[in-house]
Image 1: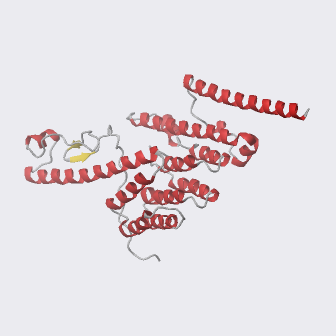
Image 2: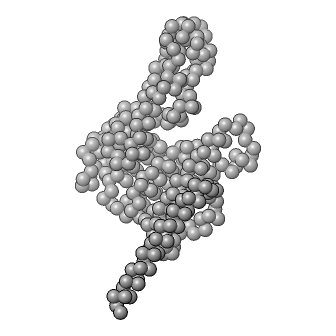
Image 3: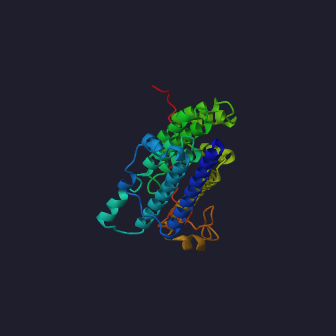
Amino acid sequence: MRDRRVTAIAGVAILAATLVGASVELQALRDRMYPPRALDEESLYIQSGPMLRRLTVAYNALAADVYWIRAIQYYGDAKRQLAALAGVPDPPPMLAAATSDAYALLYPLLDLTTSLDPRFNIAYRFGAVFLAEPYPSGPGRPDLAVTLLEKGLRERPDKWEYMEDIGFVHYWYDHDYRAAADWFGKASQVPGAPWWLRSLAATTLAQGGDRQSSRVIWEAIRQSSEIDWLRQDAERRLLQLQALDQLDALQRTLDDYARRAGAPAADWSAIVRARVYPGTPVDPTGTPYMMRDGRVTLAQSSRLWPLPEEPRAVDSRPPS
């Protein structure tokens, strides 16, 4: 009798797992055929992570995967909507207002995801980048990015990668080099952390405001990341820094031309005719730079656009 009962329970468990798997496949098929509408406030009527975790019980990990997918979709949809709006010269007030809080549900979705699965590594690291990205590529909320990563650290205090990521957010988005150096230093003290974190902390504190320091950070991330997307993003950031160097050099050349000619060049054809350059200069991706009235900029069609804000020089004064 006991063996039959155990067999029956096992059969029910297998059937339940099969039905759950089938429902996930069905939902994926439905999403492909009928793309989901953008999330609104009503779609997050349960905003308490602990409550949702109690409701999903044995399926916490599955529910976390679902919320993570929805977070990615939500972020991508908002980014596409804002990119489309950028092409409208004078958007209607209603449309502009609708996109002003385009990323409002991003953090709640990430918070729910990581509450359902507190060890969801990718959700913390990718989510922090999504949150910190400046508008319109993201909500421009490095503070929420740090909050999310600190939540991960409470679950895994030995996760030096989260400390490195917090330092990265402070460095790149807040331009707070003292805070960045502090977090890099904390990460370097975790057993098993890579050797370069300690030197990175010192470099950040001493040189915080220059591009070479940025290269050190991005190169370190590129070499250490186990996530392909993050490694590719670091490679893109390195190309952006190269583009910034090129823009500086090009602008100096254009300024020299304007002084000699008595007026700025109207476009690249004048520069080519003067044999300053053999052709239109291109950025590291091969996209031609834009130039108008002697000012050179990155083309919006380049995959390096928009370029990051230039870090300001680090404050060398001792802390008060």
